[in-house]
Every structure is written in C-alpha cells, then in structure tokens.
Image (cartoon, rainbow, N blue to C red; front, side, top):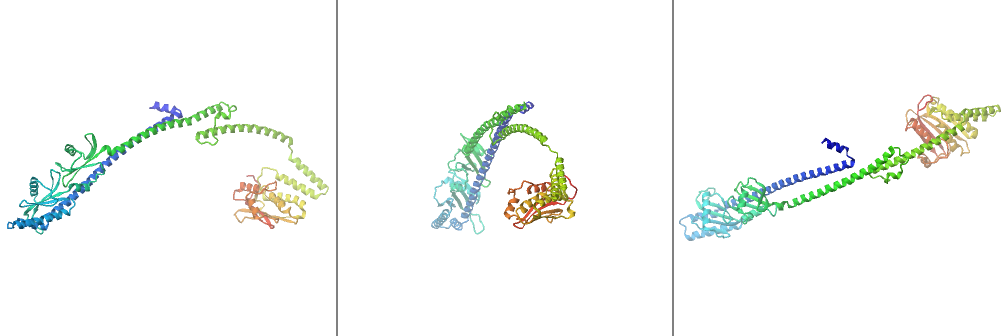
Length: 591
C-alpha cells in the first residue's frame, strides 16, 4: 500500500487526474448500483405490502357482505307471515286445500323477498312434510343435496351455516324454529336454504390492483371462486400449505407473486396470484437501460477526463520549458512568439497563467530598457546641473547690491520692491518646512502686497484683520499668498475702480477647535453655474501658479479630509475664499 501511495505521489498531474477521475466514476457507479438494488428491494417490499393490503380489504368487504346476508337469513327466518304459514302447516287438522293455500302464501312471500335482494339467486323452504317451496329463480336441486342441507341445518339447531356445493354454489342454510314475539318455543317448522350469487358478491368487493391478477377463494376443501381457476387444484393446494404469506412462486414455466390471507370469521383462504414477469417487466427494462446509460457515461467521463487532463498539463509543460530558459538567463533570446499563441482575454486559469507569464516577460524587458534610459537621463541631468549650478547666495547678494544702490540714489520704491522680492524668493524656495506660523505666512503676504502696491498704487486697498492670539497658529506654507494673487488677478486687474481686498481670521463656527481664514474681495464675483463648475474641477484656470485645488489638497493631506477650502461668491458683489484649518499652536515644524 505504501509503495502504491509513493508511486501516486510521484506521478504527474496528468496521471493523477486520470486516476482520480476513473476512481470517482467507478465509485459513483458502485454507489448507483447499491442504491438501485436497495430501491428495487424497497419497491418489491412495498408491492408485497400493497397487494396484501388490497387482498385484506377485498376479504373484509366480501365477509362484511356475507354477514349482511346472514342478517337476511334471519329476517326470512323470523318473518311473521312465514312463521304463521309454517305453523299452520304443522297443524294436523288442516285440510289439503288449506295447506296448499298456505304454501302458495309462502312461495309468494319468498318470491317477494328474493326479488328485492341484489345478491340472492333463490330462497327455498322445505316444510315438515318435505314439500319444497321456492322463491326467485326456480333452479332444480338434487334430492340428495336437499337432504344433505336439511341434515346440516338440523345439526346447527337454528344457527346459520354457509355451505359450498359441488357445483361451487354458495348456500346459507338454517333450520326454521317457531318464533312468537321475542320467544322461541324452538319447534321445528322446516329448513331455510338461500342460494346466493357469489360471483356478484365477490366481484363487487374484489380490489385486485392489477388487471392480470387472479383471486382464488377456498374453504380448505373446495374452491369457492372462480368457476375456472387459473391454477389446478394440486397447485392451489401446494400454495395453501406454504408457511410464507407472500413471496414468489413458480407454477409450470411462469413465476407468480402470491399473497395469502385467511379469514377469521368464515375460515376461508384468499389467495392472490399476480404474474411476476409482467408486473416487473417495465422496472427490469428501466434498470437495464439506466445501467447501460451509466456505463456509457462512465466511459465518456473517462475519455473527457483524459482530454481535460491533457488540456491542463500540455500548456503547463510548455510554460515550464520557457521558465527553464529564463532560469538559465536566456531572457534576451526569448522571443515573444516562442510562448505560442495566447488569447488576449484569458478564459481558463492555465491560459491566464500563460498570458500573465508573457506579460511579465514583456514588462521585464520594458523595465530593463526604461532603467537603462533613465540612467542615461540621470547622468545627462547631473552633467547639466553641474554646468548650470548657481549659488543662491549669489542671487541674494546681487539683490542686496541693487537695494544698496537704490538707497544710495534715494530710489525708495526700487529698494522696497527689491527687499520684498528677495524675501519672497527666500520664502518660496523649498527649505524642507511644510508648516509655518500664521505670522510668518502673513510676512510673505505683506512682501507680496508691497510689490503689488507699487504696481497698482491707489487701486489696491488691502487690509489685514488678524487678532494677535492667532498669530502662532500653524498653516501650510504658501497658502494665503496664492489666494491673494488670485484676488488681484481676477478682481483687481479687470476693474478700473479701487478694489478692496482683506484677510480676516476668526474662530470657526462650523467645527470646534478650528480657524476660518477668509480672503475676500469686492470684484466681479462668479455666477452660480461657474461656481458649480469650479467646485467640480471642470474649469481650466488661466493662472500658472499654485491653484485652489493644490492648496486644498495640501490642507487635507496635512490636517485631514474634514478640513479644506470653501468658496462663496455673488456676481458683481464679492468673492470670499474660506480656508478652514485646525487651530494648532506651535513653532514652525515639518510634518
């Protein structure tokens, strides 16, 4: 067993899948066969129980009807008119004529009763003088049979006795006792014989369940039903002595399913015989058909398993060969077409693996080429940087020299512009600081305003309304100067009249612990439609500096997504940009 397990473990995917599929199909077929045998046996048992139930129901129906006919014999037995006539015939002083009249009354009464009963063939009364009086069908009865029935009735002493004749006729025999009110003097008045239509009784209550079933009724010595049984008396006797109450039996060349029930009231035996082959012919055909179909499915499944295994393992084997070439460092000589045709849209996991491997090779090549090109660009940039490198201090020293010459020549405005420009240049250069105090940010704003006032003179009216307690608040560097530049560009430049621009700082009313820094102008403003487009980022601005989206993004990255910029504008009235930041105090720091 261990050796087999080791061989299986070392086998390839193709052989493993083939063995696995074969084993699964064989196990499935075995389970199917077991289930089929179980279902067949279960069906057989249900058929046995169903047939037995039907036979019991038939027997109960027949015997229930026979008990009703016993009540009929009692009604005839106790009929007042019959009692009076039979008692009159017993009187010795009655004349022959009077006896004839009484016998005529008896026959009329018997005919009346027999005509109203569905299952009665005839009713016969034998009086004390051995006269036979018949009502209904006047069938002939042998004298020997009459004597035998009278003897049976006498021995029963007034009780009803069922009797089956040699011609399989069914009789109810009873001795007529004198009856007066509720007392029986028990004087013998004659013999009552009722012949029944047993075929009608039995056929009305038989539930065979199948058209080809055969019901046989016997009292142990004689066959009561049918007139011409399917089996011989020897075969029927052999079936009656069996210990089993149901099962399979073979009679001649035919197989039958038999069910036997014995009556507890009359002592009759009911035997149902159903041809087995005709009953199970359809089931046998279905079993054989399903078995053949399952075998075909087994073979087709194995064939498809082989094909499926090959479809999985063949591409993997090809891929392994290409990977071994990559492992050997053969990347430069691996052409794209050597991987074979791979669908652009992968359908299976193996095709997706091939496509991914091909894309990986292409990406590796692209990265190698890009890396090589970048190295060349870096070296060229380093060379140009060395060639074009200027010391920032040289620029600051030059501006200081210009400022000194302007002061010497008493050019105050030039001196102020040069000083402000130098301060702006120092502030705009990246010194690694992301957050500065509001005071430092306002110094940058003042330097910028100084330059713009020299340019626009009295047209620029700028005001700062900042409480001293907020000067130590931290703000991202270069936040307010771009907003002021936008206000000058969009509000001041298009106007001829003076433009009022102011910066106000107050505690935020929308969020506790926050500051609201507002840059407001009385320029042309923006329409609601333009403002909606601007907020959605669908407006291409004219400026080349730091835009609103850049400022808002830096605020969100620094303080969180709940902070940022809010724009308010009324056409021809004003525009206000609200910068909302948390009130965080401290010295200049980097985050």
